[in-house]
Image 1 (tube, each protein chain N blue to C red):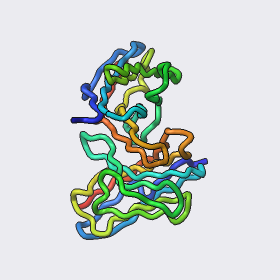
Image 2: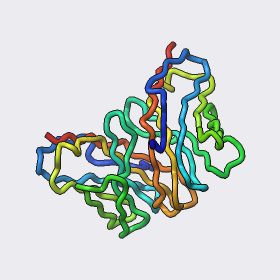
Image 3: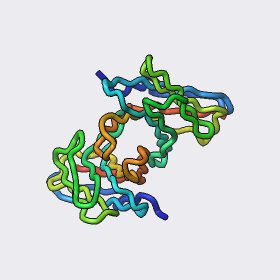
Image 4: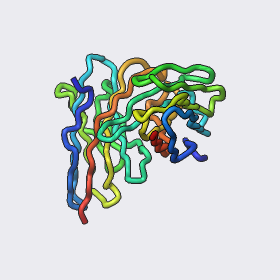
Length: 117
Length: 113
């Protein structure tokens, strides 16, 4: 089974609208974490947000929020008031295992988001 | 503060040639990682290091070797390049177990013909 599933290969969203990027995960670990990274056309990977499995509140970072539904094993990224600069590839990733640098980080296949002016 | 830098940015190799990719970070991070990114796939971990002088295998280590002789540098070596190693290679670093965030370098695009 896929560890991280991103079912939307591509999305088109009107500027200023909110957008939700889907991510579901599969793990048997009790302690794990979910990340979202942005990869613009320039190629670098930019960290956006992190949610730990024991965090009770949904993580937020500026216009980004993570809708964490543990029972459904989903960790969707919500971008409010989208901007043209949000056009990029977005990757969901999951951390499993220890916290000594040896944890396994698994990435999804990504969603290409295009913001339409 | 340059963050994580990678050298070179682009490289073309012939099958069987060898090369070393250099990753450098100036943030005094303990942990460092090498990933590869192939079209239509997410990043996959090749090797990682939890401190100077230590390295360990990741998900796809075959055909690669690494060294971490200095804390700030993490080298990825290809001894005998194969076309299957054509990919974009990313280095990342993480401060230590205090924070899970990994900081990525800009990537190296490698083509093996």
